Image 1: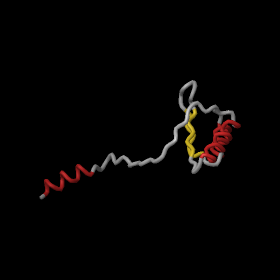
Image 2: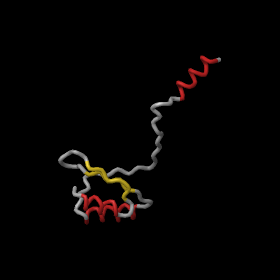
Image 3: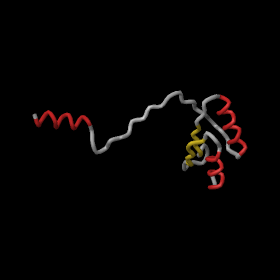
Image 4: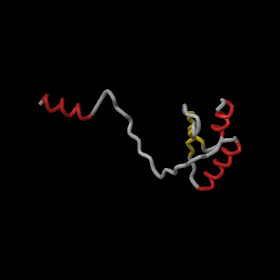
Length: 85
């Protein structure tokens, strides 16, 4: 995917992430956000107009994220606090 098409993909309202994978086919992953089926339809139509083929799609209802705290685990703190008592 050339940088112009990548930029145009990001310019589509609702597109929040474009990832180019190191594979032959199915190598572009586009993450979009919409509040209705009309939003999703508009976005997919715009992606088709850019020449992208949508092979599969997933609809996410809810996402929960917890940052990875590599250097400071709560469990380790609790163990240290017990040893100090």
